Image (cartoon, rainbow, N blue to C red; front, side):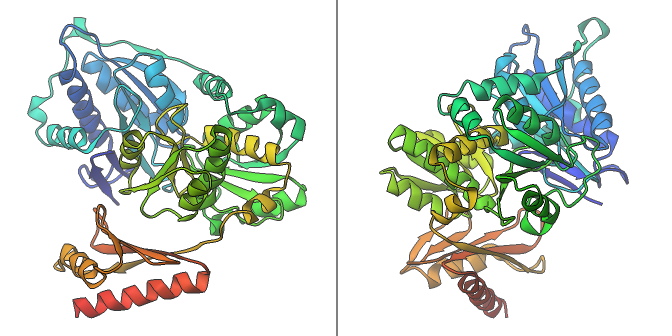
Length: 464
């Protein structure tokens, strides 16, 4: 059983002992810390409002009730969207002129997990400084002061916010509803029995797309590992071929990661979801800048430069990607795990926006999903890790690796990334366990695996 506290929120497994898992007491404690932090940021005369929403996890209603009533107890007004998506809550915060938001989801983690993801008044994830302050308040809970009876907050439910979110997506200039409808796409959707099963079919209906639903019952019983990786998506891959669909769409439980299946059942590749959407946006705008994190595919850089734009890599983590996007005036960015961030909509990973942009692109190209994928540079990734003992100085290992390759293109803003002519390796330490993550990319799977094996050997030699 596990409880992980970080600057972006708290996540853990349901049940077990307080402090070791995400128990009701832990949920209340961290909701109270967040509410206290938000109150400190605002005038005492102002009434605070927080938007909350949850995915379809079995524990979601319980955690949501605990969080909502804790905030009410602090004198904070709560707007509860109920079953929702991460990007829907992000969109709702500014639309409701709220002071913050909490998303109750453990994203791609299995059903025994849940989490509190924390937003600021822009509907964006908190930065490191703010997250650290909330953790400090949680540890020193004597600073948390609940409201007297006449000052309690109110609780209000707002249904159908996913519909509002869809309307916001359809307003985007580059979402070509007419072209999509004319293309008469047939699409299979795997909503992993969470809120993607509500949101994606509803969006497709508005776009005039025929939708075949697979695992779209929002009951929280995930029919397969909810992380949208190839090895977990055999059912939809087979159904796309069987139904002669144009493509398959897969989202994770909170709908901020988007993976696509080509018409032949092959993976479009979650790394290439962002690449394709960026290609469309840059083509329509006549160029522009892009950002992804250091562990994302080089293909985004290639596509960006093809359109005359500048690509920049950020440290891993959505908050880091967003800050770099703002710094470089980026028109589209995100993360290679299928997370698309389109500032014209909002600064958060949004699968609904991704689906609408991708289908617009496919409709304009008048080509198949597989042909579109084959038109992009082909890179192959290998993701590995080395288990270490707690006594090993991971930072020292990374410093040594950077020094050993000082004559190459080395980036140390987040671990060590070494760019070679046709491939790269990114070495990062975990913040939660004694491991080094090793991501490589090359022009073939064999080369990517070989590069990873080489660096694993070199690190092991340093340790010995």
